[in-house]
Image 1: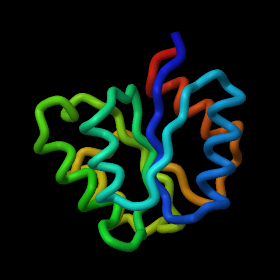
Image 2: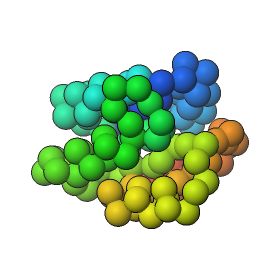
Image 3: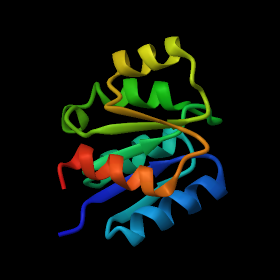
Image 4: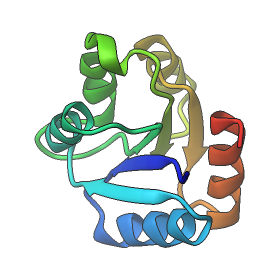
Length: 122
């Protein structure tokens, strides 16, 4: 059975690139456009993995991760940060918040799939 992945990004082009890469690799993808929508979708469905941007309107990715980690059903769901930020302090904050992995934009779609497979163990 294909893993369900939630992608959270305010950029339509990034959502499209992510969706195509993951769908072509056999994953089922659901999209959200900001952290608040990401939390809503994450808690109303079952996802094996979440891929989120950092900088988004309404709620950023770091806040979304912190909020998700407070919800018992979301504590074990791996979260990959997909962002233009390469600042070490942001990485530390993301890790402390509960991010599982990190991928810097612009990203290679094949590399995204490789990281997703590694995180999911499939």
